[in-house]
Amino acid sequence: MEALWAEYSLAGLFLSAFISSTLLPGGSEALLAWEVSQRGEWLLPVLVASAGNLLGSMLTFVMGVWLRRRYPLRILSERHRRAEQRLKRYGPAALLLAWLPIIGDPLCLVAGWIGFSWRSSVLLIGLGKLARYLAVAGLIQL
Image 1 (cartoon, rainbow, N blue to C red):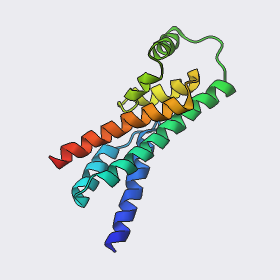
Image 2 (spheres, rainbow, N blue to C red):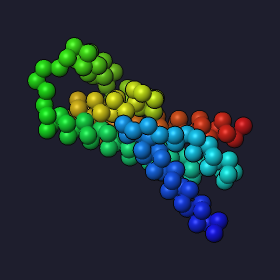
Image 3 (cartoon, one colour):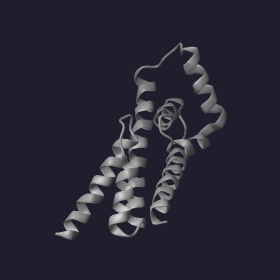
């Protein structure tokens, strides 16, 4: 029974992390903290949360690609133009900040809209997400 609970709790963690990284709010950090404290180990929960969160962010990225193709805007508002220029200036490296609340989801959406490389986006978003979950797990282990 314990193995079944452990399996489902990881599935719940994955789903929470996935939802948290889309445009919907979620609390994957709290669930990760609970999972690490219950298991007494951090590696598997961190990897599961990072994978779910990365997949959710890449879904948001793909939404940006789709929106650009489906509804191309010929005239952007000044605010949108500035945001796009800022992201272009920093390039894909800005996606290391995709883990941040509030700005992370729009970063992924705009990166897809702009047409950042899929490979570099996966790598940089994944590194940022992994670092965040490692920090959460590290704090719990103190």
